[in-house]
Image (cartoon, rainbow, N blue to C red; front, side, top):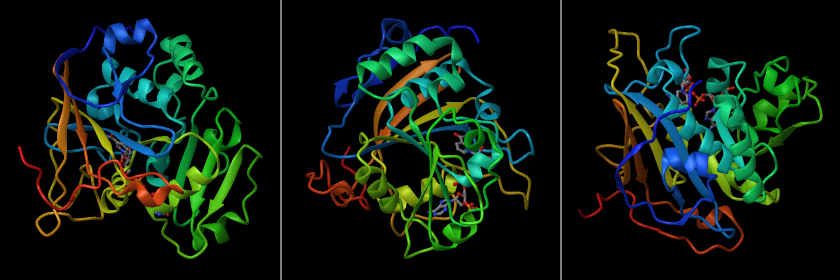
Amino acid sequence: MNRPAPFEVLWDKAPGAPLPLPSALERIYGTLRIRDGPARPFVMANFASTVDGVVALKVPGESGGGEITGHDSRDRLLMGILRASADAVIVGAGTLRAVPRHLWTADHVFPGFHREFAALRSKLGKPPAPVNVIVTRTGELDPRLRIFSTGEVPVWVVTGKEGARTLSHVRFPPHVRIQTVPRHDRVRARDILKILGSLGMGHRYLLEGGPHLMGDFLAEHCLDELFLTVSPQVAGRLDGLPRPGLVTGEAFAPRRPLWGRLVGVRRGGDLLFLRYSFPTSQAEHLPAPPPHSPGTPTRKPGR
Ligand SMILES: NC(=O)c1ccc[n+]([C@@H]2O[C@H](COP(=O)([O-])OP(=O)(O)OC[C@H]3O[C@@H](n4cnc5c(N)ncnc54)[C@H](OP(=O)(O)O)[C@@H]3O)[C@@H](O)[C@H]2O)c1
């Protein structure tokens, strides 16, 4: 894949310290500020949507994010940078099933920047690859999938009671850890963050969907920021054949609408790269961090 031309920075009010991006990445993206610290988790999500709000075409073999953006190189670069800066990348089992050969690493989406991604992780004091966290209720996971069988990335499967029962019959290699939340079948977003926090890794997490898991994180006010790529494609929807948007399985408006705040806008060709922050209630995720921004998630912030 060719090296992309620089993003055009239209508006950037994102708070936080600049990431130590290697110059080849900074020349293209510009400065990337991320607001987090060692004492609290920071959860960012990265999604791509068509201009009519579709995030997955739901056509076998053509249901990944690439079909949404036309495999745009700037989108892949941003995905790579976010993955390279994360301690863990979290996805639901539905997303894994849609792209069964995928690995949630920076190299996987943009191998041409391997050296720069490795340098960034090294400067941040992180191991070569983020932990790939797969969330499942049923535990219906195929151990022959690349992510489980090759040992290229550390994998944690987070599941509840039902999934633990199913997975107890499956043999995974040692790089795959099964983390069970014993009381429930469905796993709460808070429980995922508690598990990640208690196992002594850094606290910067990237949520890459899909729409069901995104709904859970938003419903529990566990999402700090959303990086949303809007592609100029109109995908359309047939009657009776739903195509998901950013969230499935939760309805917020009108009773409990969630309002974000726009903190960044970049342009790359005909694509827009938007960045929103959301009020969170992160205090419960870790032993003693002060909440950075308790906010009132059900109220539209003043403009
Ligand atoms: N455009 C984009 O940026 C983007 C990003 C991500 C995904 N996608 C697309 O979205 C589609 C998948 O949509 P989806 O809504 O099915 O994705 P998903 O949220 O990844 O998957 C849903 C599945 O994840 C597990 N899960 C989710 N929340 C859970 C919870 N709280 N506790 C336990 N398990 C939980 C369950 O797995 P089990 O069935 O194993 O119980 C559930 O059936 C794919 O086509 C994918 O490519 C697009």
